[in-house]
Length: 178
Image: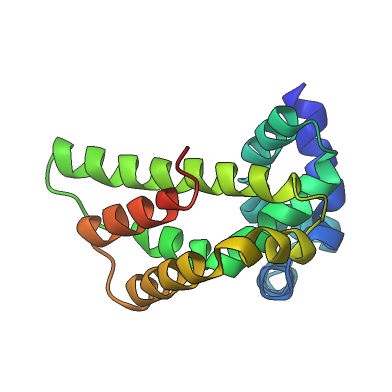
C-alpha cells in the first residue's frame, strides 16, 4: 500500500511542489549533474528530500479519503505557508548532550510532523487543493494563524534550540486542537 502511495506522491511532485521547494530540488539536481551524476539519477536523488514526506502524505490521504495528488499539493502548500522546512532543517543540526535532550528534540519534531499532517488533512477537506485549500482553511481562523505564523517565523529566523522547537511545535499544534 505505501509503495504504491509513495510512487503516486513521486509522480505528483512536479505539479505539487511550491516554487521555492521546486527551485531547491532543481538546484540540487543541477549540482549533482555538475558533479557528473547522470541527469535521471540526479533528479531521482534530488526528489528524495521532498519524498521524505511521502509516508505522511499517504497517511493523510488514507485518513481523508482524498486522492494522493490533491493531498500532495496541499501538504507542500501548507508546509510552505508555515515555513516548516525552515524549522526542521536546522533542528537536525542541534547537538544534544544527553538522552533526554535528544528525546525532547525528537518529540518536538514529531509534534510538528503530527500537526502538519492534521493541518493538511483539515485543509484538503475544504474542497480545495494546494494553495486554494490553504487559503480556504486559513480564512476562518486568520488572526490565530497569522499570530502563530509570525511566532514560528521569528523562531525559524533565530538560532535553533530545543526549547524554541518545542514552543513552535506547541503553537502549530494549537491550530488543530480538537
